[in-house]
Image 1 (cartoon, rainbow, N blue to C red):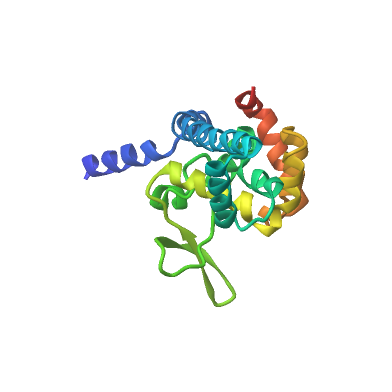
Image 2 (cartoon, rainbow, N blue to C red):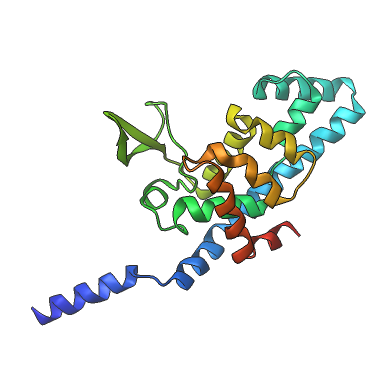
Length: 209
């Protein structure tokens, strides 16, 4: 009996991580993935911008296909879709939405950003809450990188983030940009304030240097 109690106490202590341990694990696991995906997306953005300026027949076809994929008509709109926003913002949202990579959504579905699912045919898990009688579903991803790619796509294509996309073409200041993410969360304007505080306190701004 004593052994069983000791074992239970040991097991529970393994999961009772300190704030520092949670943050250290987050930086080891999530930050490298954000940097990898950002570099991947930024390379595509830079290449596309270069192709637009060269404008030969081969590149015109590539640009046309990209416009169809992102459902845009102009070069300006396409670049607005493709340009990734600062890593500091992605890191702050990842930390907030996943509780420093300790949330059930992250552990069971690699869902770092709390992205909802509206397609019953895609991999997903049920949230622990409902909206009235409706179940809330969250997307399930194969990898952390897939979750980050999809998050960037949500911001790049969602109607709610149109003003955010316009502003990111003018500035990369994360403290200004997060003010345009009020529609990402139900807490509205306060969400941007919390993201700003998260970026400052945890020095996520260093990721953008």
